[in-house]
Image 1 (cartoon, helix red, strand yellow):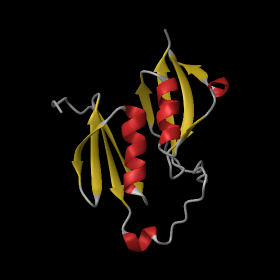
Image 2 (image 1 turned 90 degrees about the vertical axis):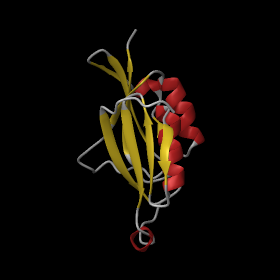
Image 3 (image 1 turned 180 degrees about the horizontal axis):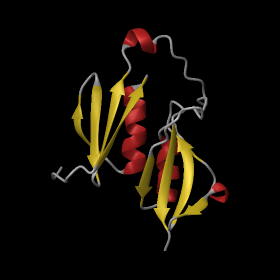
Length: 131
């Protein structure tokens, strides 16, 4: 993987690091720069996503339902610019996540915007630039 400057980043804590990492790799077209038992560093397109494993003692107390309960009561929602919402939808579903139907999209500052969630229910927003 060639080195590209990192302009933005986010850390996501996960009960199932492997599954959550696969979601962000697929939806954001990222490559693993580093994979360790405690974390994965995913990079691409000026973005760095660190998926950090929740320590096993704490993770044992966390229940992830199927489908996951969406965590809408958090005060922060990461937003990512993508080239194709359709591609994001396919990748999200393939990795246990979700993207709302296109009918639920809105337009904001020159982009079509849709919310979804990762396999553990963390809300994520994706934006595709309008033509």
